[in-house]
Image (spheres, rainbow, N blue to C red):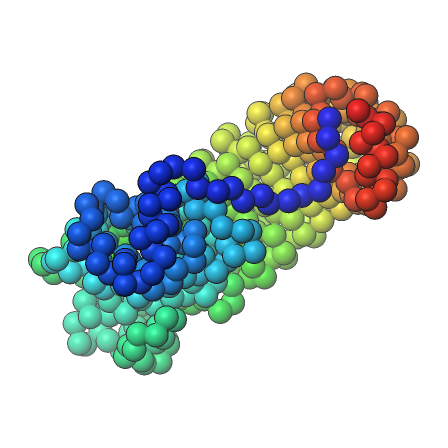
Length: 422
């Protein structure tokens, strides 16, 4: 068993192709020559290398001259240091947004862009939405231009025409648009992060019909939006395509919550659900538990920051196993809650369990019973529970399958506990 802190470790390229691609993108002049000389099949490796080495000019050249029908970001081949990942994602997102109009031209073969592995930030999503809306505004007859106007400000230097951003209530009643014969449709699969700054543009994007660009949002994160706006977004999306839904810190309670849970039931392929820090009351917990009955693909659920004392059993009873990860930090759990969780089928399938900041030092017997009932639990997180080292050793012995206990101690305590376990 090991005691560890959370960390992100980067790995080095190991394939000969990766090493050669690193050389090609090292200098923009070499990349420029290689674009016209190398086989098209090597472009994905060059793209990975330019992101891995943070080469901006080679990246923009590759994106602007993409010769294949598919452009897919492969996170397994791009592994810069963790602190550089937001920069990598931002560079790639804005480079693609700047070239969307060119991808629709007759000389482009590109038909699909798959960015499902990238958590696009709100500004990146704003760039995407505005780039697509900038294209689609020219599909409307001149009589309807007053219904939809907007501004697109390019984020990597290209100059574009600007206009004000407005959306009439009649926008959804526009006549269907016809695609021009010399254009082909482009499908884009993305993760979408929505906040107050890009909400209007994302809604406009989702209301477009027969657009040149067909956007598929497979992962949605909403930040400080409120229940009504979150519900509006879900109704505009293809719910059957969503696999990841992050709705933490949105204050989802209130009169729209029942409608939200009904919409949530349509997300049949949902595997990850984050509803942390939404201050649910008992009635809302009941509504949520009823919705969970329909989410049969769910593997990861986060309910942290919601007071679940004496109501956790409703959630547990309606979650269809096998759940792999359950996060219940800051949930004011009682000894009875832990015992009921231990007796549930859910407990038998868990790989990871997060119980941080639940004052578990006063509930060690119930916690020990819970751990003894697990068969597959390999990681448990117990930060900030006031549990001393001796108690941790006793807990670990109750669950022999556990490989990692993740907790916060000073370095001396960590070394001592590791020695005791070994």
